[in-house]
Length: 151
Image (cartoon, rainbow, N blue to C red; front, side):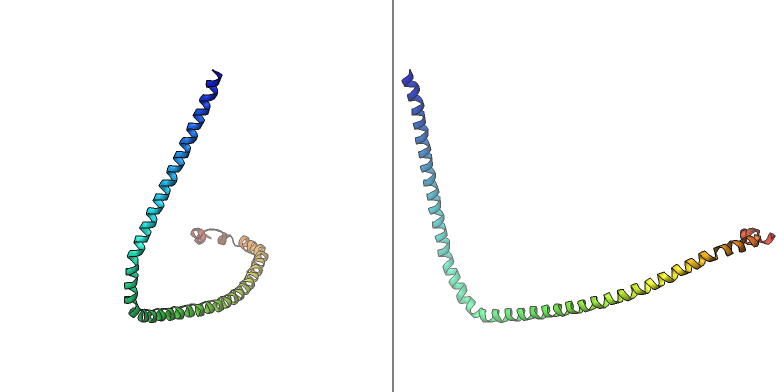
């Protein structure tokens, strides 16, 4: 019985090992056959494209000079546009400087006006007692306009 208990797990381990090796061998064969088929497909596609490229080159040779001149004209136009945009940016920077100067001047003017308003508010507060005294001396002025005729 002890011999069978040792032999059975060993046989099971050998069977699992052999199944694993067989499975790994089959996977590598499948991968290599897929790789070969992909290589064949790529070669076929390249063979088909070579005549198309050569035909395109022969037709494109006459067009290349015209196409290049068009592309040069397009590049020159883009260069003109970029030069114009650079000039606009330069004027915008100058405008920003002028704007900053104008803002500084207006802030200085606003500060002066603010000081004047504060001075006038102080003067008005100084005149408040006189205004109250004047209102007290004229009883009709304190009433509403409906009752003025009666005064």
